[in-house]
Length: 407
Image (cartoon, rainbow, N blue to C red; front, side):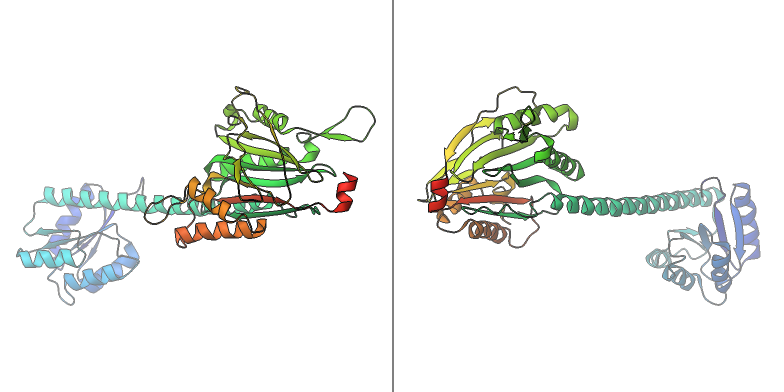
């Protein structure tokens, strides 16, 4: 419509009224068409496609009220504003005209200045409505495209989860991931570092949407053994390599992912387990502390480490060593696991989560994770998850005679 004349259809059985309105409205810059009755009006709408209709009520054939009803019943014309221009001045007629879809009502004899002012108002509303419809259509298209991108990003994120877990005779490994409606920054994995060592990590990048998902994708690639962050080749011609300690890994990530690069918080827990001896060493960068659940049901939190990744080494990443005994379990998770709320606003909470884990100490690691997820889903009563559920667990089993002798 920009740069084009607004088109007005004048519908009146009086030739004098049509000529008068046509003359005055043409001088005001409008393109005009005329119709002498209701049937002619409906034909002209399809041919002329007006932006506004001035409609008389008392006409031969179908009256103005019936014409307006037909206009509003047709999807092709229902958005065209109709201004009744009639000699009927009683309130009942005005109410009926507005009730059936009329935008305004002017009584005869009319003041031409008033007619033009009301026409301008209705055309302004029409143009704003058209712009709003167009904007909404664009926003809908963009939202659909964004949803497609989010689905694609969610698909990529799922490929970063463990595809196949390392098969270790005296170690059981299990994981659970339940995505929320918003793609986020949770990711975890299990890495076979060498014959004796497994690396386990869990990462949580702040926020939701594609940006944190892209960060997790980048970090997951960096932590692959061939990148040198978790496994370092020894100098010389020997093909041997050495496992990089957790503190060194976190220090390298801290340098590689400064706050200025993505402006997002990043927490990570990184553990190395000797699958033959049960020795475990870890470092925690402000991540919710993993649970070391002993076979007797006692619980320890593994919180030794430093601050979030990206603060340029403001604090060193300390390490701690533990020795796993047969039946001990390690549980990694993100804060989304215990920050769920029910329909009353009650939060699941760390205390309830820790109590649940202790009560499940006799279960296998896989069964334990199933029970935790079920408890959360019961709490939210089938509602959409507010955050991702990410759980990764290992259970150290009893060593057999061969392993003991070999070790």
